[in-house]
Image (cartoon, rainbow, N blue to C red; front, side):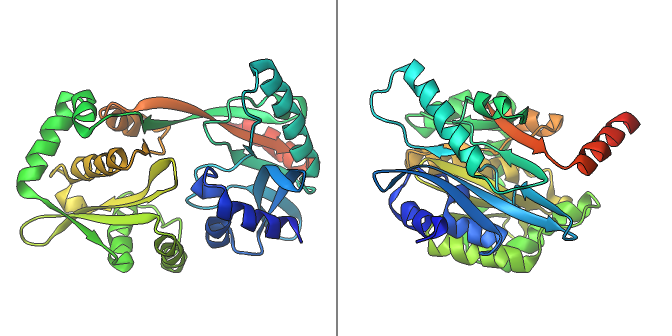
Length: 318
């Protein structure tokens, strides 16, 4: 049995694996033949895993990179029970070193780790680099009222206004969602980062695995103001895509839908992950919901001398 076959069986029984590292998700966003996984076993049971997406460019370079719409990958580690902190660090060092050594040859490595991975030192000692990024989460809220009280005054006011004029519909219409999603990119004069065929295939699998919702905010005339696409696993709800009609941007629809998703997360005892942003005005909007800043690591390494020189030249030009 190959590592990939073992990992598929592992994903069936290991609920704690984030959705972005599930085999079915990787099949969709990478293509079944474009990802693989390194695993560590103990007594024929997987105790650690690290899936990776392989991207070949012009048959010259091999990249281990992040696939589309995938917030995080990185190591997944099962820890022994009641492990002391010093033992945990030693355990992580051993596991991560073994995972690194099992990776295939590559010219460039780039992955975002889940924010629960707080120790990247073993990667540093192996010559990797790290950049800190941020997501924002809402967790451990006993009820929606508590979360509501953490919203800014402006956010609450906007939501209350939107409630008077808009309704929220749940839909399976992925084509309509894509059209609304595309409006946002069109307004910014940006091309779509994914095709409709890509999204349609992903939606088929998220729906099959009962892990997604599509929500529309509509007015009394049936006009769609904003649409959001959320996914979830056993721990978190993620808002991975959204879009809105640029002519109806001031209705508060986005805030209303975010509120609805936060409510869904709390009702199901899940953390809500905004998936964050390093863009200043987006960060300001997110934190108005009382979300907590959560750092996560972007881990990278360049082995190719050609790519190292190119990177150095690009940095000098900046």
